[in-house]
Amino acid sequence: MSKANDISVGKVSGVFGIKGWVKVFSYTESRENILSYSPWLLKKGSETKVLKVVDGHFQGKLLTAQLESVNDRDQAAAMMGWEIFIKAEQLPKPRQGEYYWSDLIGLKVITHLGVEFGVIDSLLETGANDVVIVNGERERVIPFLQGVTILSIDLDLGIMTVDWDPDF
Image (cartoon, rainbow, N blue to C red; front, side, top):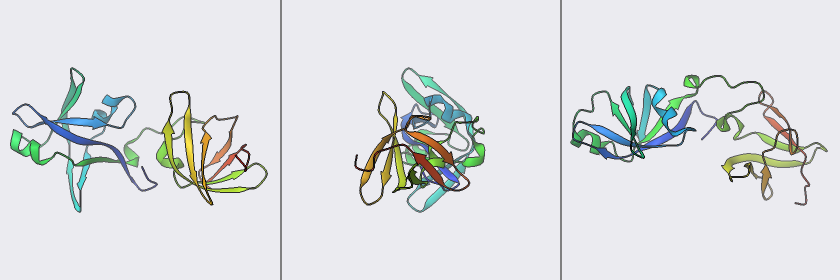
């Protein structure tokens, strides 16, 4: 994910059936949410395509989608490996105190005492809680616990303030 207007939400991972349906590997939470965003901006190398999602559903554990103008197995096979992006404007506005990870990447991270750590490179789900990966003079992994380790987030200023020991 990036601060850019295009947000990576998945990729076409295979072909399903003979009528042009594709298998989708979704990065969204929950996985089927990717089907509610249309159109998709598909990218592979320097090529891009914009296609509407016509239909989609789970087929067992597989998430499948039918895309406009993809009508047979050969056309679907040609879509394999394409990354799926959406425009940031397609996302619902987050509620107060909630953030999209893509909005946090690139924020400058400082402690409440003014020590600069660097910028947020990525976020990671660990099971117990999400963590923020900060790159600066060294990499830091900070638990994303709002009100505990994450004191404030100011998207307008591009700053996340944390309560974290600089030596840790």
